[in-house]
Amino acid sequence: TRPQMEEGMGSALRPAACRAKGGAPGFKVAVLGAAGGIGQSLSLLMKMNPLVSVLHLYDVVNTPGVTADVSHMDTSAVVRGFLGPQQLEAALTGMDLVIIPAGLPRKPGMTRDDLFNKNAGIVRALCEGVAKSCPNAIVNLISNPVNSTVPIAAEVFKRAGTYSPKRLLGVTTLDVARANTFVAEVLGVDPKEVNVPVVGGHAGITILPLLSQVSPPCSFTPDEISYLTTRIQNGGTEVVEAKAGAGSATLSMAFAAAKFADACLRGMRGDAGVVECSYVASEVTELPFFATKVRLGRGGAEEIFPLGPLNDFERAGLEKAKKELSESIQKGVSFMSK
Ligand code: NAI
Image 1 (cartoon, rainbow, N blue to C red):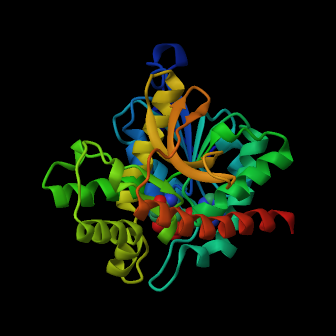
Image 2 (cartoon, protein in one colour; image 1 turned 135 degrees about the horizontal axis):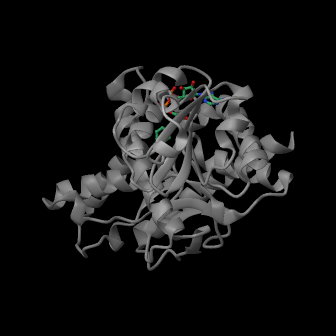
C-alpha cells in the first residue's frame, strides 16, 4: 500500500539529486491515533523535535488533513499520513519509536477501566501491527486503561515471539507533570525546578506520588500531603469534568507524551542519565508491571530503579495501589487468553 500523502507535490519537480535531503539524520517515529485530541497536538510537537527525521501519522479517520496541515511546518521531519487498517503496515515499517494514543477517552462519570472493552481491542490490533512490521521498535503506550493495556501489549508481543520488556513503556508522564505543577504551586517555585517521582500505575489510587522524595528536598504538612495526593490522583478527572463531555486531557497529555518520547529518543541516541517514570515490566514489587523511575537507553528501559525509602503514608498507599493494579493487570492478561 502507498502512503496516503507523501511530502508536498514540489518534491516531484526536481530530480532527487538536486534536492536537499529530506530531513536530518534522526529517528523514524509513528503516531497511531494521530487524528485524535492527543494525537494532533502530539503530531505537532513531534514534528518540532529535531531528533525526528520521519514522522508517520496513522489513524482510522482524518489523517489526510492532519498530515497536510502538520507537513507545512518548516522543521526537518518528513511527514507522511496513513489511513485505515490497510495502511497500518506501511505506517509501521521501519519505525524506531511507535507512540499509541488511539482509543476512546473518558466522559464525566467514567473511570479509565470503563474504556477497557473498546480500547483493549484497538491496542491489540495496533500491537499486532507493530509485532509484524517493526518488531524492534520502542512502544510508548498512552491508550487507557494503561494499567491493563500494557499487559495486553506484552501478551501480543509474547505470542508473536517479539517481546522485549525493555521496549514496552506505559506513559505515566502526565501524572509526573501534574505532580510537579501542583507541588510547585504549594511551594511557590517554578515547576521546572521540581521533580516528583510518581510510581504504581495510571488510574486513581494506583497513582502514587512519593512526596517524601521530591527534588529539591522539602517537607509538607499533613494537610498539604492530603491535598496534593488527592489532586494528583484525580488530575485526570478534574480535566474530564471541566471539559464536561468534550473529552479528557489532550493538550497537557500531548505535552507529556512529547516530553517522554523525547526522553526515549535521547536514550536511543545514547545520551547518559536519561531518567523518567514509566509503567513497565518490573521486579520492583511482586506485580509483573509497575511504574517507577527507569533509565532510558539505546534499547528502551535499560534500568529500573527501586522505590527508595517510603514513609508510613506512602507504604499504606502502596498496598492499596497494588491491590487495584493486580486486578487491572489480570484483566488485561485474561482479555488475551479469551
Ligand atoms: P480522541 O477520541 O480524541 O482520539 C482518539 C483517536 O484514536 C481518534 O482519532 C480515533 O479515530 C483513533 N482511533 C480509534 N481507533 C483506532 C484504531 N483502531 N487505530 C488507530 N486509531 C484509532 O481521544 P484522546 O483524547 O486523544 O485520547 C486517546 C486515548 O488516550 C484515550 O484512551 C485516553 O483515555 C488516553 N489518555 C491517556 C492518558 C495517559 O496519561 N496515559 C492521558 C489522557 C488520555
